[in-house]
Image 1 (cartoon, chains in turn blue, orange):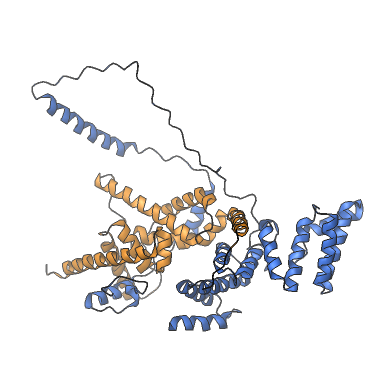
Image 2 (tube, helix red, strand yellow; image 1 turned 90 degrees about the vertical axis):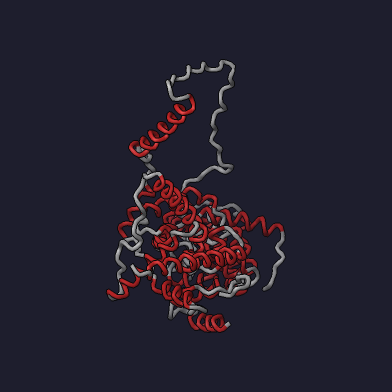
Length: 318
Length: 197
């Protein structure tokens, strides 16, 4: 290690030969340290189960604290004997309470400025592990239910379904995203707060993407409640990808959130490679390198593996 | 690096969006994703192999503080930061208890056998682990944490900074000092072991 001011070029002991014998020994030592043993699946499951059960108060360790209390009392009484003289010790008279003493202020618990929320177990989006790989758009689920309803009941919902179905047919069957947008505009004019408003916005998103109108797609993704779309973490990923070129730092936030949860292989590839690209653009070469290494470790034959290897070679050569 | 001038409306919109995004974080998903990795880190930092209790304590804090997580830092960094605080606090409490003769000494960091390797490499690994932890025990908590994060966990400087809540320059300065102290204690320990009995 250099004697000057340390910099980011400090090499770990495990990665360096060391300029002297002691550093060489340290390198050898750290290289020999194995990873610690992992907690077994059963232990992990037990901890997980404890987290879900309500907390129990810890037992008061009477024995241990009683010993400590006894030691403290002995020390205190010994001091009192020494300070009052040796011949005879007389307990000091009890001090009468002061009648005019103001009561101690009540201890109030400081409430957090924002109300505490329980973990959002009830309101979260479907687990990505349950959803299939969602890279191709699917028809929104409520539409089928709505179609069944409207066949019998008719009324506004029937009209909403008809308009939305027309838009979706243009988008998915006819390959006419411009025509789909026109149909969606018609829907919007008639039903600005309709039952299927969210589904119409998702269809609009798909149409924007098909037309390459990425700025509008991104603006829509910023507005939509992503947890209610029903496509797992793909919309968040998509938003990060759309934002990556213009604002890689903000894109990284979305990539981070997506990578915080289990993803399907396809989405994980996009997230890891996307984040690596953004980190590179932001100047975070170490972070980009870590992401590319992780990508190749997990997806050695993935769709970005060729580019990932090339970029990694370039980074390693620097 | 390109810069982007972000309009005020965009910043406010992104804040609202980020708040909505953070609200989606699911403790179960976070546990499934990070528990094993954090357990290994906790075992390293605490010098104990029975990391289950500490893991539970860490995730209790995560559960309590999840609403505060704003997505400004990477989730992994945030979790590591919580783990560091919990482990350091526990170690301090245990040190105090040992001082007051209320606890036994710490557990052997190599109590569980490593799964892979020949008997020779296993033995070498155990010895190396014991030596590293013996030296780490002589360091301050800050020095110890820096060494574990950088040398053993292999985190880059920027991430160490995020975990500890300090600047990257402070990481390098602290690491320089921590490494110097580690070398001193290691040299002393090595000399002791080589002294004829």
